[in-house]
Length: 261
Image (cartoon, rainbow, N blue to C red; front, side):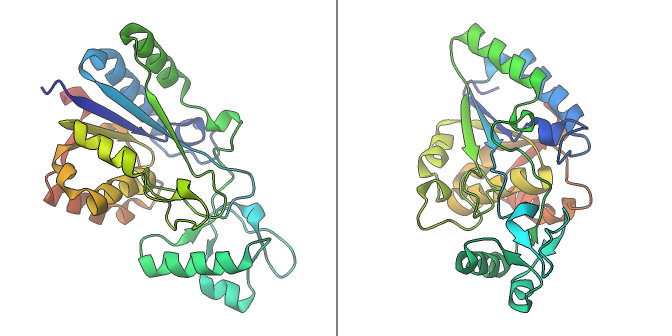
């Protein structure tokens, strides 16, 4: 076992991980139990913990309130909106019309994700934005025990672009540096012999974070261990991530259960 290990916990928040959360990922509650146990059992072997927080405002490009149809009604959650829908007048944004058109076209050119309207989730200052309580307690206990804080990284605050991955928004905004590649954080990963990755959702934010490492620092992928029992898919969308994980495996990433580390 290396003595130089980073635990990366992606979006372990109430809205994703609690059955009453706004965007509950089935299996998320059990994932949180296992991540909590991992921290409690192996705190002395984990040198650093990074915890990401999906962080949104009410009016967000992926929330219903940002959009209106011809009658002035917002879309229902899980509606897919395309650039063609804007051209046809089926949906219109309430602001930033030119950027929104550019955003959707760029997203479609990337060919990774369609633009899905999610239920309002992880709103800054709300209960749903908070970490799973038991996980938060384990992190607090570890910090006091070792005299060292974990790192918190917020993503998604800019309401005009999705920010699935830890390191970069889906479409960076020219006027917002926080949406551009976080090179400092990416470079930090090189300091660790092992990078244990877990959190929610396997199909989206975890997968996109891995994809960004593949894109910008492929030499680090062999240091990654994906914790298979500590992440779950948005229902029916796991296939979106499968090619990403296959590519990561090709570069040397491994899978393991948290109890087998």
